[in-house]
Length: 291
Length: 345
Image (cartoon, rainbow over all chains, first blue to last red; front, side, top):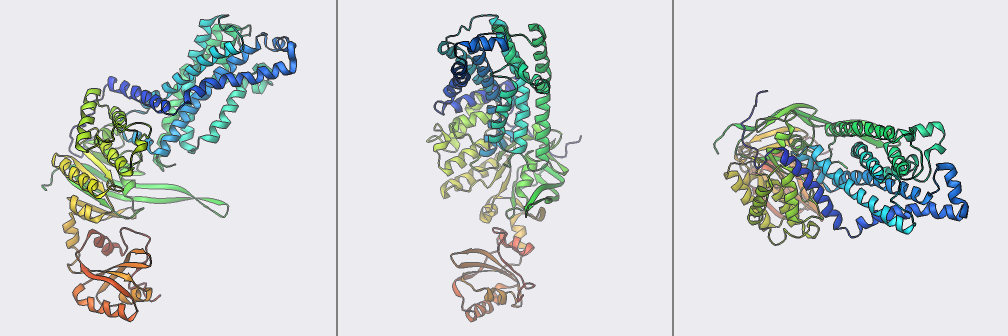
């Protein structure tokens, strides 16, 4: 292609892998600076799973009394219903925070006009989105770890049982597909320009299908397949099966982990592609600044 | 100014928006042509003004050139890079101030905002630090740059947004209404900095509603209306296209009947309401020879019981150029239009 204009320098821009990493790092740090200037925001994330787990635990005790553990074991394979609920609520907070934080980031940036400023810069989407999702990841893992530790004290359960390392592997690998889902979710927010109701609905649909308080085996077959197509379901069950006497979906840890790995390999690419395509479609019409 | 080579070449850019029209329970898709086949060259080292009323297509054109919107058809070359095929290099070639005081993180300090956007422009950390210090001195930001933006006044946010557009020291600067909400001193300061940046070799694309500002700053201007460029050239050249002494401004309480009669006076081309506040009207009259028609205008105003507060033949401004070309006011495009054709209807 022939340049039809004079060519001068690129100002102070120096494109390199180091400056690309610099974008991700700067976005990540800025996100934390901003959230830390809202008092209490991070603490509330950490407390939420404990409260969420407390509801069914107390309900179980109130309804079934001393028989609660036995009844629960009949349905799930473990009598440790408290840890079962705590794992469910804590993994749920990881999933929901990933969606909330990425979704709200896009929405808020649209409203404040900073999204257009970001889009006018040469930084690549993947670099900026990596910074945002990394922030969401760290914040959700902090909430997960805090809730598990505090919850274990409150509900008097022992975290250090079963295969701890394997449970962590399920959490870490399970988060990678969430990256892709959050990109796709971000694309949806970019398109519909609304976050609140979408996130409200999504988080309860997610909570329902990933079985935060019950095993998905109680679902009728169709709903079970829907739940199994959702990576957080595998993550939650993997953590539970590693720590408690709950069965893996495929009977062994490595097959379940392989499924999660397959999700991890495919979904980030799919999510990112969906994001770029949506963005292009929007730029063909009203642009990202319209809200 | 000596004309050099173009640094921006726009070729037949058109932009059509699809919007939904809602009414009486039915939604209909409506196509709006915001830009119609716009072609233009902006030369390296010039201050180029883009003028036009709201909705004329200025912002759409700038958003296309800054890669925020994809043109429906046509293309452009910016700093040697193709708009659609080398988007990132185009972005690295430009600094933008497009949304006034929006586009800043309110929970970050001014310095943190500059550092953030500096990183997004791939500026190495040590260079970034030096550049921020330089901009703090240049734009006199030191009193507030380390406070969070939420505590800033509108003018301070505007000047920070201007600093943000300079962070990458790009060869091309897009400034969209940069002095809106600034006080007189800050606006004068900004114009002086723009002039210095231009002397250093930066090409500046400047949009403004303030005609005097465009007149003072710009080497050339394009007047855009309804998605088309209707006039292009140096301000002096455009103004000389209207014969001297052909503009009369009248201010006061002017009845509609007086306006209708004025446009019927031989030698009057058009009369446009430039402003209307608190019952007072500012009427801009374009005519062949203002000195000759002035007594007739006064006669009509007296006969129609108008209260005249001010009446004077004016020097031709860029707004008069727009009025002469379109028969409408540049600053307020929805204002009443009175032309000989409409008079008496």
